[in-house]
Length: 312
Image 1 (cartoon, rainbow, N blue to C red):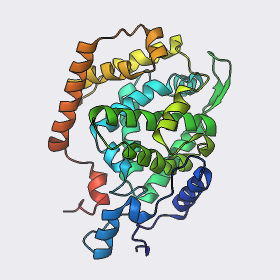
Image 2: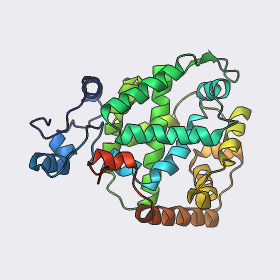
Image 3: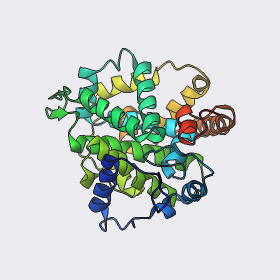
Image 4: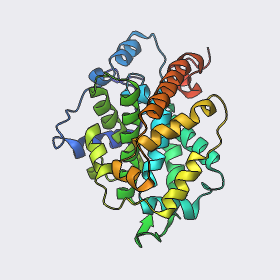
């Protein structure tokens, strides 16, 4: 079941995605391609010793993706990513014209969270099925953005690259914010590993860097970003989202953090004023929730299943 290098087998399509990513990146961004032993040392050791019955997944338990997506930063950064992605008028037009986000934002958020849970912890067959389903949903999402006058296509590789980079940049920013003093190399590992997901989604890999800071630069310098009336409406819907469970207690703090973490020019156009006291209060609330959640909130069932613990 396992390769000689100790890495869990992957499907042919996932292998092709990894190969494509490696070919597209090296040596342009200076990020050295690592072996499976370097990326997943404990996975290799445990698998070779027979201590774990591991399920085939896209990333693996020792990946930076599992670390960041298993942290509260995964949710906080994911919400920020939605706010950043909406700055791209073509992406927002697709959502406004072809989805029920405005009417049922809670459902859209829940579906997005479940999709990323599958991508992170699901079996390779589950990941490929979920990605294929999303791409099928994207097929009819074509039209013209009324703000920029530009045509849009939800499966456009360049647009998918922007959406992907927004997610990587935002989750990395949230993780760095709530883990001061972290080894910054984990952010580059995260960006590098996530290119596998970008390849499966059909993103233009020439626009998907393997270094986290480069992902941030791609987003910050994207030429069509706009704070339009449509964007303001979308942000109001996101901020007014009714959430259930413990996250409802810190949702106002999460929205405050998201607003304050947006690019400076966006905050200026939205009239978001500096508020250091409120910023600190929001950070403390989210940091505390993250610590408590890591202890009190059960791990994702898919995560447990991938580790061979789902039936225990």
